[in-house]
Image 1 (cartoon, helix red, strand yellow):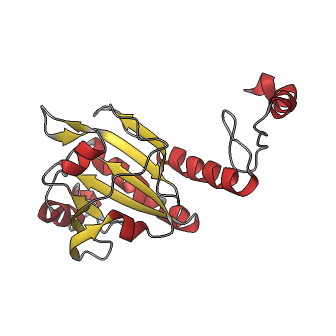
Image 2 (tube, rainbow, N blue to C red):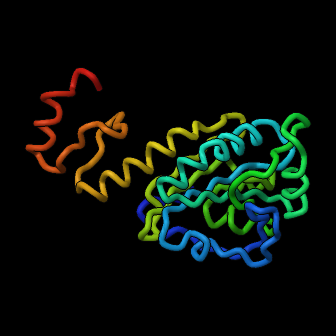
Length: 201
């Protein structure tokens, strides 16, 4: 699997169902993200089992992502028509409702290939998630095999960690959460941090 962390996020143009339910025939990732942070998540298929729980978990945290300046984008190999039908089905009937981010139709599967999350023999994407910084680079990548759902709160934490690093120039040690102490990236910083926190790690 390709390691994209630290490298430019692959750009793409594709058809997408937008937040308002309209169809964008030429959705462009970089144009959509603009000067914000980006969070792209791939999932295997519409109308399946783990996938709706993850998609709704992202949707239910969109106020927080918006507060942090993050544009969220979902991608699967389904068509825009399948995405739209799933959005139009109530959650009580196994649907999604009107989720608050674009759902990209990766019909050619090229986007999944570019992010190296495509299972070629099955023709579906793994549960890959990519955090894109304002510099256009991937700062975090996370890939699960199909049965394992994601913890969406972890992606909120990682955005907050990236923003802490950008604001303070410090690094975020293991288990860092917003409000915690950071670490200066030198020998004295490590010694100072571990002298106070080693046993709690």
